Amino acid sequence: ECWAECHRRSGPCRWCGTGKCCRGKWNGGEGGCLPTEGGDDKHVCVPGLLNEGHNCWDACSHQSGLCSWCGTGKCCRKDWNGGENGCAPSEGGENAHVCTAGLATVVPTASPPGAPTGHSTLPPGEMAAPGNGVPPGFLRFKGR
Image 1 (cartoon, rainbow, N blue to C red):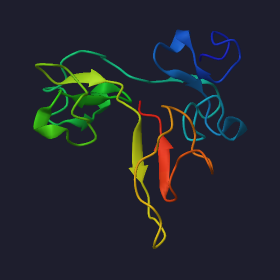
Image 2 (image 1 turned 45 degrees about the vertical axis):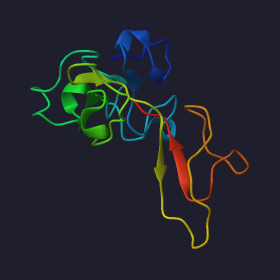
Image 3 (image 1 turned 90 degrees about the vertical axis):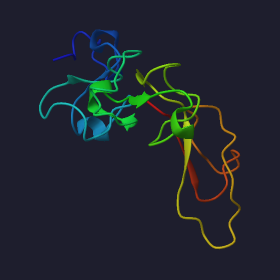
Image 4 (image 1 turned 135 degrees about the vertical axis):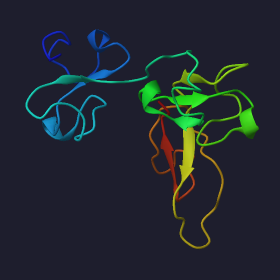
């Protein structure tokens, strides 16, 4: 339980390391917690990035991308196959696959016919809103 140690607040908390303190369905999700994260009847630490900077190739079954050994992070190697499985070419270790938090990414969604295409110009972590430089059919997600 992390509620007291995290000063009775949901979300990122030093006591949880790189994770966050969450309770499932608490206030519909708050402080960066999803309603599906955390304990059923108490706040518990939800893992964030694990094993940051450590070689993950074997632990992640020789696969780039999301891997539970990296927690909410990804197992990436710079310029590996030009970037694959959610890893950008600039992410990861120079000479090995390592756990990394990842970069902010733009994920295309279905666009209405005739809608402009392209990528968001939002700073990392800023939410998409009308008039905020995000073409219709695109959403901005903060990579973790």
